[in-house]
Image (cartoon, rainbow, N blue to C red):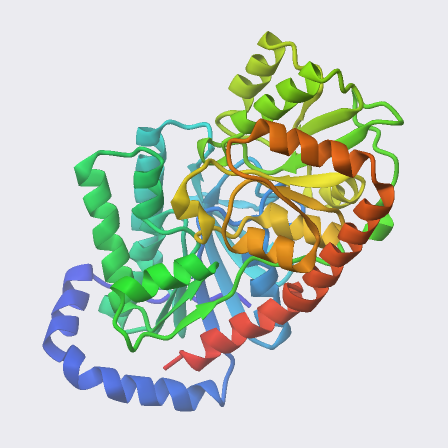
Length: 446
C-alpha cells in the first residue's frame, strides 16, 4: 500500500513549530507512537538513492529488507534515484515529475536523477544534493510513521534530518561507509567537501533514534562520534542463499574461457576503491610463470573498467577477461560456477574493518573459496572458517601462489567451498539479518 500524500507544508512553518515546541512535545509523541505501533502497521519511508531489485545488476539489500517488512504486514515507500542497473521499470508521472509504481509490494518513487559510477566528482556531488533536497520535500509531504535513510552517499541523511527536525518522526540512519574517513583515505582533500561530510555525519548520528552499521569498524566509527546512549546495531550485508547456490554450478560458457581453465572471478563495481590494478599485477605474475590455465574474470561495471581493460591489453594479459554486468538472477549461476571468488580492495587501513562488500557474501552463498588481499574482519572470518585464502596487500607473488595452489587442489577447493556455504547459512542468511533489521526499526518507532 502506498504512503499517502499530505497537504504541502511550508518548511518555515515547520521550523517555527519545531523550535517553539519540540522540547515539550517529543516525549508525548514518542509515547503515542509506541502505543499506536502495537495497534497498527508501521508505515516506513525509506530513502536509498541507489535502490535496485533482483532484476537489476546491483546490490538488493534494501529490496530484501523492504520485502521482509511487507511480509510482516508493514507498509514501505522507497524513494530512490535512477541508475542503469536498478532493474526498475516504473510509469512516469508527468504532474509530479517522477516514476512511481508497485514493485513486489513495495511502493517505489524513483526520482529521474541519473547517476553512474563513471561520473566525475562534481557531477556525482550535484546529483547527490539534488536527490537529497527533492527527498526533503517528500519527507515533509508524505504520511509515515518512521523515516529510514541509508548511505552511501552521506547526503542521504538530509531527508532523514528533515523528517526528524520538522515532522518529529522517529529516524533510523544506516551507515554503509564512514564519511568522511573513506573519501579522505582515498585522496579527497577539498576541506569544504570534507567539512560538509563531517557535519552531515555528526548531525545524522546526533539526530537519529538509532543507527545501523554494516561492519564492526563502521559501528565503532558511529560510537566514536555519537551520543553514548545511541542504540547502534551491526547488520552486515548478507547471503541470498537461493539466488547464489552451489547446485547452480555448471561449466562456464563465458567468451574466452576454455573447458579446463581455472576461473577466478571478481564480481561487482570496478571503482577506484577496489584497487583492481592489483589483479593485473597478479595476472602479469602468472604470465611470467607461463601459467595459461588460470584466468581472471572481471564481471561488472564502474569508472575504472575501461582503463583496466586497456591496461590489460597493453600489458599483453590475455589471462584477464572483462564481462559486462549481469542481472542478479543470472549472476547467481555464474558465481557458483567460478572456481574461486576474488575479494580485492585498495590497500587503505580504513577498509580493513569498515566495509561489508556484497560480493563476499555472494561468494559464501555460492559455496566457492574466497581469495582476499587485505586484513580486517573479513580476512578473520575467512581464516577462522577455512573458507578461502588471505594474502598480504600488494603481494602479487603470494596472490599468484594462492591461485595456483587452489587450481592444483580440487579437494581442498571443495572443502573450502563447503565451509563458505556453511558460514553463509549460519551467520549471514538474509532472513536472519532481515529479522534483526525489522526488530531494530520497530523497536525505535518511539
